[in-house]
Amino acid sequence: MWFIYIIKCRDGRLYTGMTSDLKRRFEQHKRGKGARFTRSFGAEKLVYSEGVRTRKKAMKREAEIKRWPRPRKLALIRGNKSL
Image 1 (cartoon, rainbow, N blue to C red):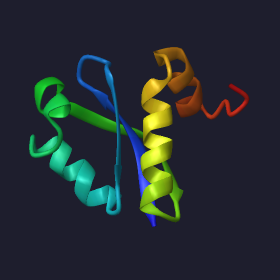
Image 2: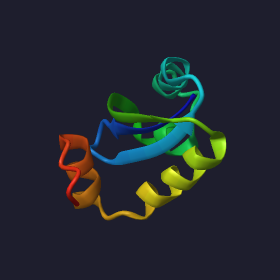
Image 3: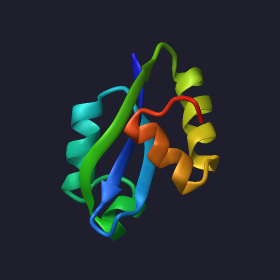
């Protein structure tokens, strides 16, 4: 199982990533051992995650979400799947 996730940073920015171990990866982000983005802006809270079966599907979904504007990401976080 693979996971696509969104982290809210201390300044309110959103970071989207993917991993096969969600708990471990979020802890890495919080300790400053994750992506450069979260090292710079500080991982505060895991606000969204979804599971997919394959790495290929996870990569595709992560890229899709990263292209979205902020309001659409916020709608996904709130659970508004109609966007």
